[in-house]
Length: 257
Image (cartoon, rainbow, N blue to C red; front, side, top):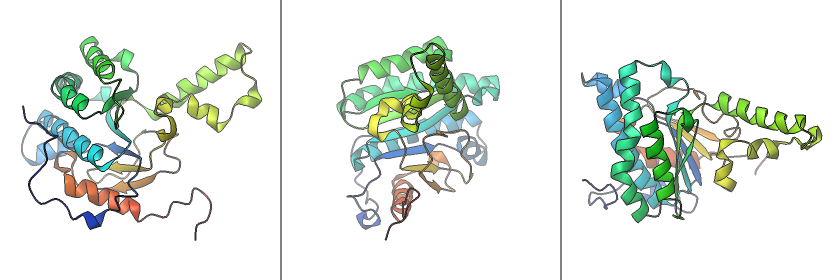
């Protein structure tokens, strides 16, 4: 098995491109372009998904080495069930393969796995693989590798609203107690604590849209859109995306000199 944690002896991207003292704490990525990457090479779409899984390992290693606190990856949306059955079946098998080969390295490098999404609706083998990875890495204290799996931003908000409404209905929550903080605490990302909201959202493959991803949490996130297809994401393109983020002036609705 190839270890993606081993240091690359090739010359890395020049460090001056990044201010290592101001690395974003939470980076979220919409991993787009697996299918197009494969089609450009006259390969089946699943070949792109397979290569994309290897890219996940590489980017996880890079993010951990840079000191990022949370890396959230949009792996499968609530809308992706509309894809052809053969492709969905392959995608449901990827977490099993991924965690089977990568969890030992995650443990070795102190990375903890978390998952947001409706994992109870996943095929049993996929769900078990996800739950085992969470359990096996729960004591790790380094970077959180957070997968959005069978996740949709609108569905998440609806679920949160239903939970809050139920508390109001049964008399355990007064209406005036509903605040932005309470809503945030009702989101699936609440487990991430102070790192719940992404500092930057990166989307690969040239598309410029959110695609129902973390709709509540990205209210003040910066966005970086790359033409690079996800399987081609490498150290250079990842660091360049972070460097672009560092050029932004984040004001959160106020003013900064």
